[in-house]
Amino acid sequence: MTILESALVFNIVWTGSVFPYLRYFVASQLRHSDVRFRFVANGCPEDQVELMHGFAAAHPDRVVEVFVSSTSMERHGAALDTVLAARDDGDHFCFIDPDILAEAPFIRRFVAALHDGCMGVTSGKGIWTDDVTVPPGHPGVPGECFYSQDGFLFGSPHFAMYRSPPLRETMFRWGAGFGSAGDDLPQRTKDALLAAGHDYWLYDTGKIVNILLQEDGHRLCHFEHSALVHIGGVSHYLSPPEKQGEVLAVDEEPDQRWPWPPARLEVARYTATLLRALCDGHQPPTAPSGIDEDLTARLARVRTALFHLVREHEADLGETTRPERAVATTPRPRSPGRRRCAQ
Image (cartoon, rainbow, N blue to C red; front, side, top):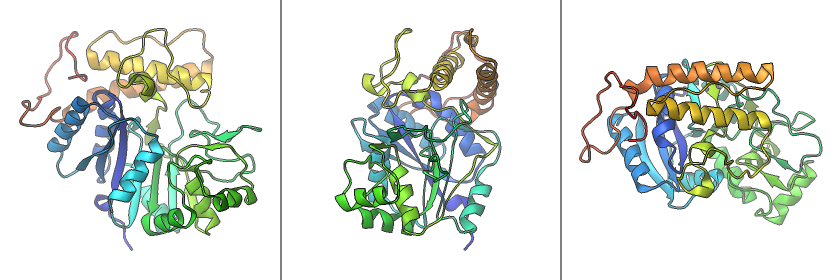
């Protein structure tokens, strides 16, 4: 069966007050695909939901809905489970992180994987690393780790496309969901995970579902796409979960469910600072000093991508609030002090 891009709905889970900044990333996803999007507001203030409605009104053929999954911030996987239970998007269930930018068309290869027998396909390695394997002796499966030491595929929680019927069947059979972390599972499911060789005390979004799909005989696939640039963790600096929309002080670090690798911290921190500067009309910061050559090159890649992102996609944003609340914004030359994003 041919899969049309326009028939796919990608769920984007938004948290806190990140929308004014990360909507640029979504504009790039929109420009370089024909898929549609659902904005899932997970613990977002009312003004942020209004901004989402404004974006949706400017792109009525591409944003199908603004869906409030919870007024308080829940786990990413729990928000996805809420959507899956409440909405039926047909043959596929898809999601993508809001801090993934697209630099060229990207959907076709993933659709081809589903055509070729993959029940699900994931992607989205953070630009800060090349190692996506769970470290030896690690007690859990973090989001950024896609493989076990022996090569078993846990998949990615950042970008995923699934065939919906088998996905729903597996989740129902095992009593598991994208938000399942381990202790919340039925005992028979815990026993099945242990028997399959997965002895971890905590699992990030979708890891357990991906294991169980393969236990049920389905094929899960994963690959990276050169057109996608995933920052990773930037939302925690733009709007830390523990602060419910507040901004971090200069010397503060967000709470970490998992201890973050230093490279991830550097990239997320620098990206958030640079994105704020570009959006708010401030002087862009230089890259931090005293870091190794590899990380310096990665930050240079981020810097180039963000300058291009904000310049290229401002015209794609459309209205920033609901039509009855404000006049549609028209891109025009900006003075250095004019705010672009946090409107």
